[in-house]
Amino acid sequence: MATVLLVEDEAGIREMVAMALERAGHRVRHAESAEDADAAIRLSLPDLILLDWMLPGESGIDFARRLKRDNNRRDIPIILLTARGEEADRIRGLDAGADDYVPKPFSPRELVARVKAVLRRVQPTSGDVPIEIRGLMLDPASHRVTGNDEKVVMGPTEFRLLHFFMTHPDRVFNRAQLLDNVWGANVYVEERTVDVHVRRLRKALAPTGHDDLVQTVRGAGYRFSAD
Ligand code: CA
Image (cartoon, rainbow, N blue to C red):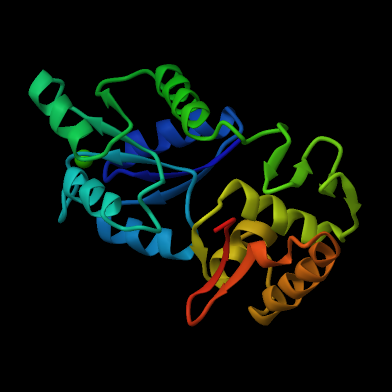
């Protein structure tokens, strides 16, 4: 299950793709242009972008290039959707940083399969597989956290926050992005709530010496990093 940002100006294709992805268990957000997509990404980082090549305003391929030059956004996988099926265009798309390329017309089932394949490739640690960073281990299946094999106790919100951090290491998230990703987009919580839970998370991680993994980035937000 992933959050997919669908950037497509044709309503018919948007509906068809959204329906197929939602049926496969994904959360879908929409943008009709690169400008729209910029705003959506500022709100929260998607797990994957399905990007139409031919968009009003900035083209999909220029948008992809721009994302790949941005440190905070370059890791978001991109699948280009396009009516251009020529080999030269395919190479241009992949050169721009797209992870895959689906020529139109495509079947919804084929697209869902490509999304799944790209997510599997880029997120080997997602799902129920335990994640380990510098001796800190989080097991999503059993909801257990250990630090250097010692049990780490924390509340459910801290657990979700840590899970999000550990599956998205080395990236800076502002408070709004953390709220959207950890608390959910439709929940009204003040931004300083994030600071409270980050503080609790650090406190929980302190006994095993893992509190420094949760880093404050002045003026920007928080980052989880072993560096
Ligand atoms: Ca289009």
